[in-house]
Length: 98
Figure (cartoon, rainbow, N blue to C red):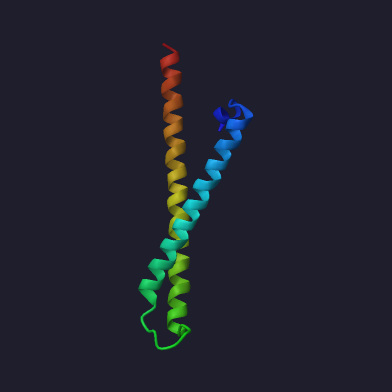
């Protein structure tokens, strides 16, 4: 994000707008995937307008697992990115020390 600070103000605003749009799109995609996966897995009867207790429990459990999984994947991705950045910094320092 340091390089964003070096941009002119109008480009910073455009960058932040694009970033917000990407984050919104990712959030909506995750939500849609969660709804589709849990609905397909848990809802099997269409005899009434409401879900029965077993379907409700299944959806709650499914949604909880899905959210935990996406949080864990996000954490692992952040760890991987941090490791890659450290390796690049170490390589740059080693190359500069020659």
